[in-house]
Structures are given as C-alpha cells and as structure tokens.
Length: 379
Length: 238
Ligand SMILES: Nc1ncnc2c1ncn2[C@@H]1O[C@H](COP(=O)(O)OP(=O)(O)OP(=O)(O)O)[C@@H](O)[C@H]1O
Ligand SMILES: [Mg+2]
Image (tube, rainbow over all chains, first blue to last red; front, side, top):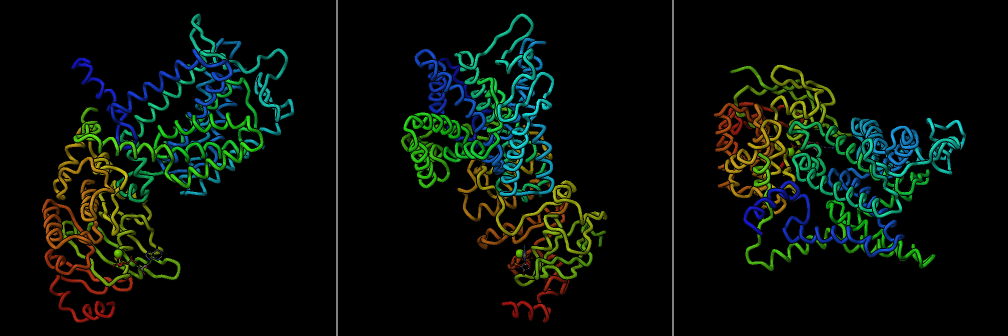
C-alpha cells in the first residue's frame, strides 16, 4: 500500500467510525469487506432458492436496523415497527400498479414506499412525543397502530377498496383492481431507454438488496457517529438533562422516529417488490415481535450486531423449519438462552470482548480514530 | 444593588402530599454569587428545578431577566441563558467527555470549533486530556467536574449549581470555589446550593436559608452563620 492510500483510507472511514459503533479498527473493516464480498459472490455457488431466501434476509436486516436506530440509540422501543414495513410495502404496491404501465419503472413507488411511513411516523410521533408519552406506552401505542392497520386491511375485500388500478383485496392481499390492470410490478429502475428490471427471484435483485443493506448500514454508521448521533444517545441517557442544554428533545425523537420509519418502509417496499405480494398479516403481533427479537438478541446498541443477528436468526429459523413442530421450541430455547447469557446482545457482547482481547494482545494498540480527530477531519 | 436577574414569587410545589416548596419568594441580583443553604429536604433542589423548568410550580411565578418564564419549557429557558448542574451527576455516561461537551457547545458554536472549545472547558475544570475517555470510566470526582463543565460550556448568564462540591476532596472543593469566583468575575451570575459551610464561607456571598419550602433567613455569610434561629434549624434537622 502506498503512503497516499494509507492516509486516505482512515480519512474516508473517519465519518463511519466512533465510540457509538463496535468495530472501528482496520481489521474490522478488512473482515467486513471480506464478508460483503463473500455475500456478493454467494449467487455463484448457491442454489436459486438460497439466493431468493437470502434476498429476503437482507430486507429483514434493513428492517432490524430501522428499529435499532430508535430503540438502541434513541431509547424508544416500538412494538409496531412492522406497521411502517407494511405501510411501505402497500405504498410500493399501490403506486407501482398505478404507474408501471405509464412510466415503465417503479423507482417512484420505492420512494413513496419510504416516504409514506415517514409521514405516518411524523403524525403519530408528533402526537406521542408532544404529549410526552414515554417508554412502554410508546411501545404499546405503536403495536396498537400496527394492529389497527392490519384490522383495516383485512376488511378491504370489498371491490370498493380500490386506489386507481390497485385493489386492497382484504385477506387476499394487494392486487390489480380489474383484469386489465397490471399486478404488483418487479422493481424496475431507470430513465427512459435505460431500464433495469430486478426480478425478486433472481440474482440481480439479490445484489440490489445486498447493496441496499450495505448502504443503509453505512448511512446509519455515519449518522450515529455524527453530532445527531451523540444527541440521540444523550436523549436516551437523560432526556431532561439534554433539554436543559437548549434542545427540544421531542424534535430529536421525532426526527429519529421518521428516519427509522422511512428505512422500515424501504424494507417493506423491497419486500413487496421481492415477492410481488403484500398481505395484512404483516401487521400482526408476530412480525412486530420478530423485529424486536432480531434487534435484542444481537445487541440493540450496535448496528453490526443487529445485522449479524438478523441474518443468523433468519437462517437458523429456515433451517429449523424442516424439523417440523419442534423447531419453534428449539428457536425459543436459543432465544431465551441468548437473552440470559448476554442481556446486552450476543454479538455486541462478543464484539466488545474481542475488542478488549485485541487491545490487550498488542502492547501499543492503534488508538481508534478519536472523536477529536473526526471532528477535526470534518473541517 | 442591580436589578434582579431572577425572581420567584410565592412559589408552591406539591408532590403528592409533600410540600417541597411552600410559598418561596426570593430574588437574585444580576452579577452576584448567591448561596442557598438549608437542611435536607428544605426544597433547595426543587427550587432549582422550577427555575430551569424541568418542574412547573404548582402555583406561583418565576421571572428571568424581567420576563415571566413560569410556563416556559426547559429548553427555551436554556436558550435564554440559564444553565444548571443538578445535584446528582448528570454527565452522559455512554458518551466520551468530548461528545458530552458537544451537547452544550453545539448550540452556540460551529462544529469545527468544538474540539478546541471542549478542550478549553476540560482544562478549566481540571480534566485536560480525558477528551476521548468514555465518561463511565471516569472517577466520581471527575464526573462531578465534568457535570460542572457541561453547565459552564453552555456559556450561561445565570448558572445554577446544585452541590458542586459533593464528593470532592477539600483541595478540589477549594478549586471549585475559585472557579465560581472566576466565572462570576467574567460577568456570570451564579447561584450555588451547598451543605459544605467552609465552601460557602469561602465564597463570601449573600446567602439564603431555605426551611420547609420557604425563605427562612437571608444575609451575608457571617450574619447567617451567627444567626441563632439558623443554627437551631440545622441542629434540629441533624
Ligand atoms: N419528585 C418528587 N416526588 C416526591 N417528593 C419529592 C420529589 N422531589 C422532591 N421531593 C420531596 O420534596 C422535599 C424537598 O426536596 P428537595 O430535593 O428539594 O430538598 P433539598 O433541599 O434539595 O434536600 P437535600 O439537601 O437533601 O438535597 C423532600 O421532602 C423530598 O422528599
Ligand atoms: Mg437537593
């Protein structure tokens, strides 16, 4: 490596590293790159079914990261994160069905899939945070919002529930309103002549989902290590104290909540594009709790841990599914054991432990890029 | 004496059945150091909480710089130049010292200037060099100093310090007193709650005695220290 690249790389990573994330060393990033590369190459060796399944895992990981931001960093537990996922999914489908024939692409639908839940979050969040609702009440209120949305979507079997060419379809899920309307489109991105279609069952979609996960992960790393990230942690630790420094804590919470909802919505939109299918069951208790489990088991305060946990748990549950009835029991035992052994999260605990080991094994550890250096670099 | 920067009129604060403040009226002149003493449970901390706005008085009014702020939320009062160090340590344990200081400094300074400013504040409270240490790894005394540093970093016009010397050694306590005098000389009004009478004496400031949620006595330190009634409530409370 030449001297120039040696000095450039830390500068590039500076914005992504900091005390709010585990894994800031060069070794971490080398392993990280190796991991991403391995996933990128997976379709060359894996079966079509495995590729398809892994695409969905990446989408789940984006959803988990969205909860990690508000729960792990801002200290707001929501039991209704699947509501934003579902709203994003429906929004993608509705806009996609209506626009695909006119514009030939569904990128706008993807954008609406992220924006619609952010708007919902702005409305619900404003109500919650401005009435100073706290803790378990926020968690439960969000679950109620999700259940209500599910309840509403279930009773939309009447053909009157059509938005343009999209028919909400009640228990059957979203579909075309008439035989002449298109069904939920594949994700199709591009301008004019240059259009790429990503079939949810194919490799291209797999790479797209992987890219989206990497982008969301890096974006959130940057966010939590930025000044907004410090404020989120400050609010998590002591809301009142943060307020006495002149910050309207409600706005900070609302901001994080909307970003989180947009990411969950993005995941939902990708999910709908993946299976060209969206159904009211996504709003029920199960999916909501599942997200909380992914985040809690890995370590809610660390982004990397949440991704690793979500991918591992999703994979384990697919593997276990072939065992039949007993699979749920085994999964339950794994979860309970994980929570008992490492209440702060399995991978977060392992990561912290490994980090200390590395520091001890070197006589003079390379200091992690300091916050001071970072702020200086931002100049 | 100059115009009051702060005034509370007939403030009551009731928690369930407890009357934490019971008709407190008190004013603080701009530019002074003002000490507040009183037995445990006299309502001193509650007084501060109603000043900064994290608690609303049950009845009564609070004025700051001539403006009524009784119903103003805490973040708006902070923006008017009020800053507080609460009684318990209130630095953010999971942030580094520099990130902690980022919170008050970010409001008034450009991002690029913050590291230098933060280091200056840390040096001022005797914590030079701990910038990148997570706060939970600092000692009790260091965290106490950082809590003070945070409230100073906000560059307030009126600084409220609730027991700044608690848990500090006598040498550190003397340094705290010196810091308060220094801040005051630069124009800051400082209100200090303390139990340490040596510390209060060293500030040589006007002193208010709170008892059962009201103003019991007020005067110079010597006046208060020799007041028989004040001695009686302190002994009675002990
Ligand atoms: N949040 C609360 N809920 C119920 N009672 C409270 C609350 N805060 C304070 N009190 C009560 O109000 C009274 C005054 O409390 P405060 O903390 O203001 O006293 P203080 O003068 O600061 O005492 P100390 O010297 O021990 O710090 C006490 O009896 C206390 O128990
Ligand atoms: Mg007190």
